[in-house]
Image (cartoon, rainbow, N blue to C red; front, top):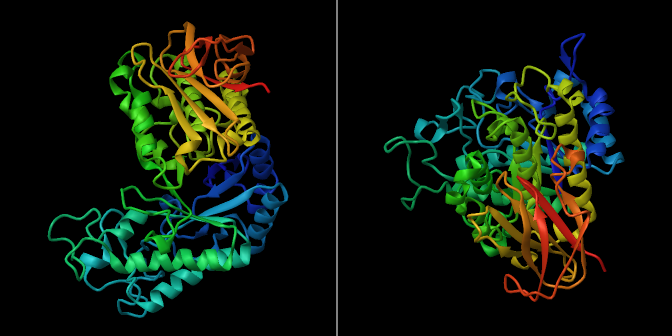
Length: 484
């Protein structure tokens, strides 16, 4: 599962008319691009009708309507069909956590507090200036359930990502003392919201087997992606916000300082299997002064691109499903701006189209190697080889398929210094092919590597009976697979 996250209003615009593509136009251009890049799913930021472009769709007024900005409901259905025709799943964002206070929306719908709480300590969301649903009312829960099930039934979508779940779960979310009311037991948990989320997941999975629900939940609430009968909330997956923050913080450091922050690389594996995680590099990380992914990277231009390839390579080797926001795949320099197109002209320049080729090849490798996706959610699908060589800045690990004999070894050199004659322990003898080298000239690298393969020697290393001696390229990721 490799997801391409898209804001349909700014992925690409028609320059002569300064307008976004229509659903029908996306059914050709966007579908072809996602298929060519090798992504398995597309995820749309909210396509429900909303009055304000600046909300990116997250302040919804038309819960049963695809936004008319890009065409008719039939046009949107045709877009979903076009993706399905190419074997690509379609996910959409849904926003049951809050709603705008516009008079033409749900706020004080009949002149009373119908959908929201009357008490602002329960009914106001201070972060976004919006209203909070009263999940304790059967009618409100029914409305929200119906509005989400509708998209599965009418448009045959393959999953939903539920926005801002943490804001639903906690009564004191973004509130100071005295600005919120505790639940009937004196706690901060929104018990009615918990009931609603469980009902939502039960209803979706009961009616539409094979789809998925994904929570954007940024806290350590236990069991978000665990079954309800085991005490969980019942989501299929959860965004791993901790991993995302840690890896971006780590790579923002100048490589000479990274050895002091190795815990940012390793800490995520302590909890990686407590939930069914998606690794998100989403729109939220490239707006509001956070800079684009490429611009977050330290160093000169070559090092920025190499660090970004390093990030993507580590991400695709790490347990968890993958999500990448549009523009990251070709190295957008500027922050994302919902009012204009991505900078597609950059892809005529070598560093950018080579980065794009790298992401395309990463997706192809990912889809072709069961070791990279079959055992994402159990600990036996991952094994550290070595994470202690902080001085040289090299970490190595293995990913295993369900058939444990099928494994891939990853070596990440987190510094701009090539490591020659570097020895890594491996479990089996034989030839190990380089199935990935992020430093290849084809991707804009310096072309350091191992001539396509290395041979394991009967020299014990890292607690394993065999080892390979290799060149670890600067700011590079190698993936080695044993030839049978």
